[in-house]
Length: 309
Image (cartoon, rainbow, N blue to C red):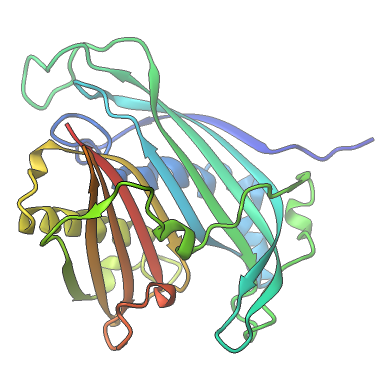
C-alpha cells in the first residue's frame, strides 16, 4: 500500500504586527518572509525534519522566492489566514556552470512551498487612526512560492548536490518540476514597452552587521528585501517619481550565495516604467568586486514590480 503523501499541508491564522502593514493597511513585501516561511520552519518542522537532515549534513538552502501582493483600497485587518503546502520535486536542467565549462546537466531535489494568504479587507478608513477598521468578508491578500534546494554545504564544490531522497522526507511523493528553473537571466528580462526611468539608477553600499544575521550564521533573507525596499524609495525620489502613489505588487528573488557579518556589499538599482507599471531590478554583490555591473555574478538578485495608483 502506497503511504507516500502528495504534500504536507497546514492552515494557520496569524496576527500581524503593526509594522507589517503600510500606511494604507496593505501588507509590505518584507512581511511575507514571516507569513510565508515561518510556518514551514516552526509548525511544519516536526513533519519535515529539516533539523534531522541537517545533522547528516543535508540542508534545504533557499534559492528562490516569489511573493505576490494584492492590495485592497482601504487595506486589511490585523489577521491573515495562511494555507501552506510543501511538496518534493525533482528538477533536471541545463545550466551554465562557468565561462569555460559551458552548459551542463544539473539534477536537483527541491522542496517547494506554496502559500495562500487570506485577509479581511477594510470597508472604509478606520474611525481612529492606527486601529482596526470595520472589515468585510475574507479575500485573497497574497501568495508565496519558495524553492529550497537540498544541498550538502560542507562538501567541496562539485559534490554538494543531493539526488537521493533523504529518509526524513521519503514519505513525500516525488513530483517532476515542470517549470523552467529560475535564473537571473530570465528574471532580469523585461517585457515589451518598458523603458528605464531617467535618473533612477542608484548604487547603495553598506556592511552587514550582527543585526542582519540569523541563527544559520549568515545574513537573513529579510535583510535583502528591506534593503531593496529602501533602495527603491531612494531611486524613486532621485528620479522624482511620486513614492506616495507606489504600490508593491510582486517581488521575486534569487539567492545564489550567502553573505556574512563583516562583508561589504554593493546594491545597484534601476527602475523601468511602462504606463503605471514599474519594475525595479537590484543585484547584491561584494563591495570589493570590480564587476558590479555583471548581474550574472550577483550573490542575490531581486526583481520588484509595482504600480502607481
